[in-house]
Image: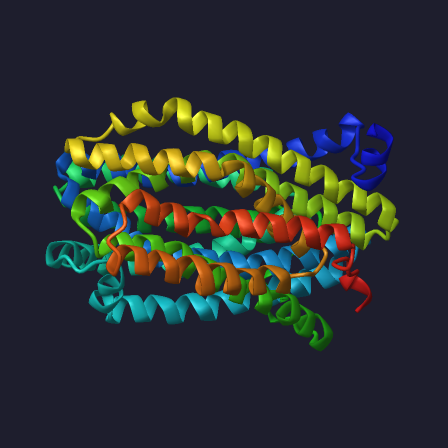
Length: 459
């Protein structure tokens, strides 16, 4: 029986493969942890003032979450192509792809910044019906809108560096910028050490300054210090029709997928935002804890994507790529199970970091338990649909899957449960998150078909 199982689901048993993933993943995990720690610190600090400010910044950050996720979509598509060209050492092609990605994100970031700056109240009304939350969130967005452009461009530069296995710069930039962010937030939220007491607006200003510091560090590294592809400022003007076509051919399905996924994910906040403030606070706390724990799996999936993309670009046999794909699925399931256990063990202590009503704390603990139970499937979904399929140039499977599982099944059902049938909040959140289970199963099925592998360097 074991021989049959090994033949049907072969995995790599040599430690070198997993060591390589770990070496790439650790700096990314630290980067992700530093990024999420800022949101966590903001949530805790504002929660010390009152639940209203904590809820307002959490709802306002949903707009940035969608923007950041779409930038990640552009960046992921570019990283897939760069990783494959890195496998065959196509440095000139990498420089052109880098320039194409930067230009695309710069235009996108500028447009979104202007929209958020001009219509902050309209965006806030999507995620809350409470006038106080809308007013506070609007004041946050009027300042935070200025960080969208530098953050988007930094995201692209991080991804391009990741594609050529330059991951240390991510950690270096973040280990400088995010502590600055947390310190400035503390000074500006509470008015410490002579700084003005700005509350929620202080959190926004601290974020803008920190993102500008991060962007500056990356620009200096990419154009002055990086030696593998030796990118120059003049390279930003380079174009190539074939590479540009491939960039958008691969990138657009991923961006649309990220749009469908991110708006679907924030639908949980939109739905809870129309319920009472205790549900809003509880869901935001649970989601903050989930994002903190997810740093580990985000690092692993990005490392897996680079490894598999490089293997495909270098012309590795399909049988070996199949073993790599199956191995990262197992890694995702095991990692997700461990992360779920961590959420169960530390969920209640985490809620004690906040000053909450008993009702809000109860909701937070319920939602944390639901997210913890989903984690094994989330691990498989992240290493399957996101890491493996995208590395092979298949961005359409995730897109189609999200359209069906989120927008045609779980979100309509959750909306009916919340606003028509009056189901408990925990049941509504459980329905919203059930799409992850469905996506994980689709990802495994698609990987086993072996129809997702495309060497994009030969297109």
